[in-house]
Length: 183
Image (cartoon, rainbow, N blue to C red; front, side, top):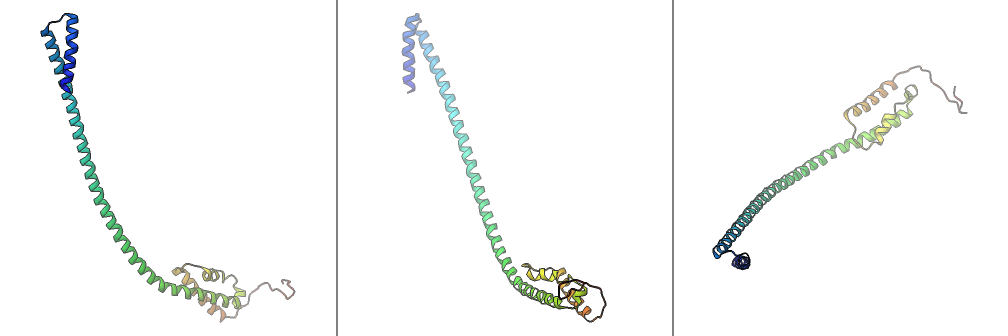
């Protein structure tokens, strides 16, 4: 292919030389110069291709290394995920066991709140101290566990009822007659 180009150039130059009256030495020098220039151009292109190939090889090597690094990272993350899943399952088991005990307590607190509320509604003390059953009513209907303060409040309400029911007190309160009239 290269020699075909040189021959084409040489033939073109022969016709050009005869047209312009150059000597054969000039023609030979011109052909040699053209071949040399084309060789330099081809050598430069070849160097560019080699450089591009080497660059692509480097990029490929970097990409493969990055892939290996990411696969190793993926394996580490998967192992961490699996370990955390196992830990979570163990903690959920412990939570369920503890919730079982607290669930019983919750049921007892709800039942006791309802019973105490019914007792307070029928109590004579409620006439002197109205509004004591709202908290117990809310606690008996609640779906979540009560906190320690709320448990203490239930206890306080029970103790107060016991103490107050043993006392005799005088107080002023509105009275409603059988016909609905308030006095």
